Length: 198
Image (cartoon, rainbow, N blue to C red; front, side, top):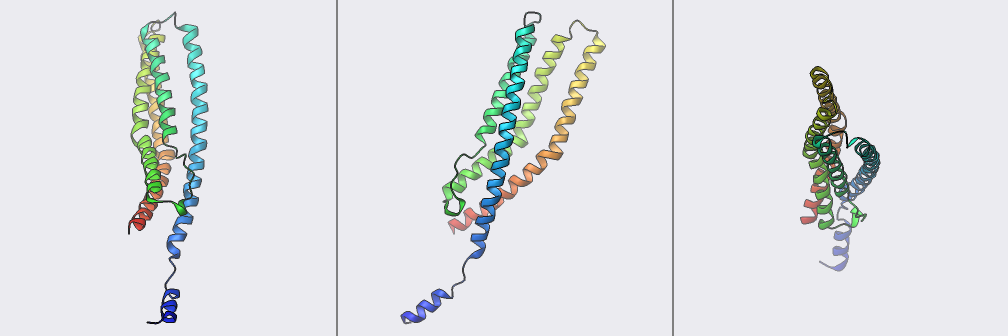
């Protein structure tokens, strides 16, 4: 085979447009998802900060009137909020490299962050909700101690029903969409990683 035949053979090789198109599409999808996640984390952080200020004011204003369940409930709420914010910030991918020039290490980093986000939605939110419910039960039981038994149980039932309905709505409206989006990006990244290995 002479040089001209070799050159023609090389030029006739199909260009792998699918991989470039996948990278471009995935880069755009990933950037949009990261932008939405960033604003969601910022809004959650602001909301939790405002809630912590409000809860702190309640504690400082009324802690002398109530016993240890009141103090414990406030401490649990504060701890939950801080852990929640830290977990959400940990799930955010701060590296801003270009996916088109990324290595398998960078893709693994993105997969790790996506799996962490998935774990927050599927597991941590439920643990957070259960512990928040326990903290609210302690708080309500202590705050309503001078009320009638019917009033106390009604308050607990209302709080339980509210938290349960909000969590169900969140699960089927917001979290379902988030999980679908995360799973699509995970599948695409795993496919791209397998192409890099091959």
